Image 1: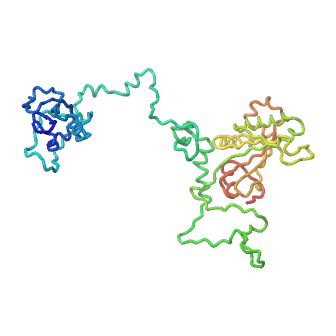
Image 2 (image 1 turned 120 degrees about the horizontal axis):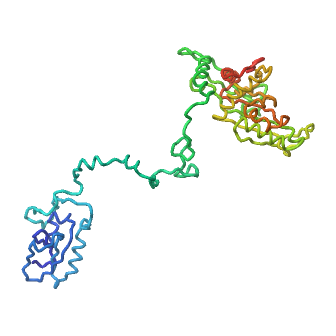
Image 3 (image 1 turned 30 degrees about the vertical axis):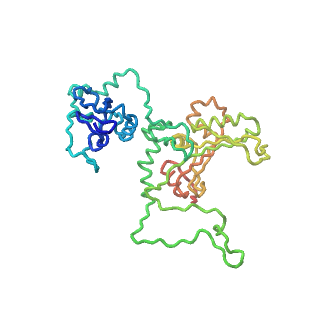
Length: 419
């Protein structure tokens, strides 16, 4: 044995500490270490049969020399690859440059397993056929708990800067998701199948290729330079008022007029003159015919003849209808209520706000014709049933297009038509 205080014994071959890096398998070996004390001058011989099977690297040291110093040197020299690991590591047969490299060739090591844990093993056909997750889930008596990795929608929306926000209600994973609609309401089905295509055909305007529309005059008037104070002033509105009408764009397939919402408003003066039973009955009646929670309002102005003071009495109720509630109410109004009104000519052609919204009124006798009130007429005192103003809001930009839409859906108009 040389002057080194330790040596390494690998697979029946002794390697001194100075030459251990020239042995390629040692650099990537993962195994156990066994200390074998050897005195100087003693013949060193450890047969392979004497080494246990679980020991792959034998550390040979001379206890009379500075053993611990050499052992610390070896511990610092061994790389981290010597740490026990569950991942099998292959041998590195790369030869590093060294002035004390071994002159002998690579040593054959026959103690390495031929098959590792990454090699696939054949599975019998019986095991494959017996794997049936669907039958296993059906045979389960109670449902498994939710997975910790399953997405759970947050209950509250904490703002756009929060990393986790609830999905929109249309997403099936949302807490507010409602499946459907499975069938369209009758009014919506009629609009999609008949009315929309008819309006698109009636409002079609053909523009040949290369057509340029004539220039339009500016909507806002500029100031003349008759006064030095006119400079940098904002443009003026049109003559006759400061209200500008909405711009009407040509109707195409993506802007066909349609119903947006319906507003039911009822002003009850008896609530201020007598008692609050008037406003309670009016709220119940409007809520019954609209299927929407009503909102109450107090008066903003004073009416001396009715004894109404501003902000003192609740005198009005209002309901905003959208979606299916709007479509169902419109269907009842057109198919049930309006045909029952005696000597009713229709909606005036002058009703409109020049922006595609049509308003008309119903007296208390007409409101009582709704099926929700007729079927339970005894619950509403006849003199307390209110009248109502009904405003139909459409996506049209002009009253002409709004009347065209409502006429196609069954609302008649009479008299002079004002756009």
